[in-house]
Length: 372
Image (cartoon, rainbow, N blue to C red; front, side, top):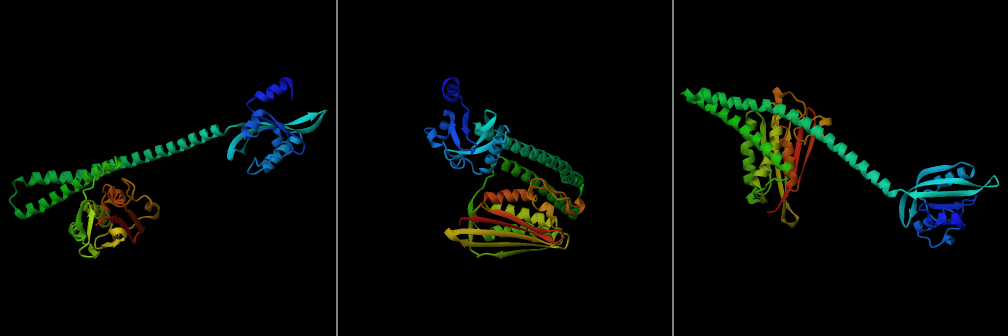
């Protein structure tokens, strides 16, 4: 083409092409050839888009061009094409070519909109992530408000007990009554300390600042500590509580014993809290040495308690989460024990799982791997 039309075709940035009634290329402008990396028109003339492998699925493009050859004009239709080994997003316009009132071909143009679409997709993904984050934040805030409401009641009871008993007992000489009240004060202060430690652990976990004091220690010593603390607590509810040991007597771990005991006791306390008086809580501690002298430790806590409803099971390790249960029967608590146990287990290169059925009890299993 010569003159103004030829100059326009050479200089425009849109990719322009024209075809005959058989949809074979008759020519294309410089932008089109440069886009696909063709040295000249000879590469495309007489060929169809299918011959050149422009489209993954050519049928929609063939259909569009037959519509144009029937007299329809198509403007800015979204599509894709393969260019230099990459699938690109394009917007295509196609019009019929008329000569003496008769359609003799198709003229078309397209622009590459890949970057814009990718940018839009990124924005859409970011918006979805932001929406999810805001939803999670609202959910956490709701849980936190519920938690703080529970804690006002939960803290008030032991604090009031400590305050009132210590005031009343100032002038009492009855040794038996004093011993009983001191036991209540101790239990109340222990509970408050446990609550404070849970909150501090949660703060540390949020900031990824959990600390571990590793030492080489006999697993039997860790098990002794777990059994001593848990059996006293289980006794207050007349539970059938047992600790089953399945490991060599001389096996040692390189670990933070306090953290291992914390994991076990948090699972055990959950079992005790949600098991009715007279029920059963069993702790199994299993360990064996496997490849590369690593000790695989498994702590399983099984109870005959109220169990966990199926719709709550997936949320049981969420912070502050507690299934709605009768607080007079099962207490309120912080809802942090299992969350902390999960964080600790994962920090010790392990995992914690739960199996449960409502009214039939639960089984919590923590597995961890330690050096010797």
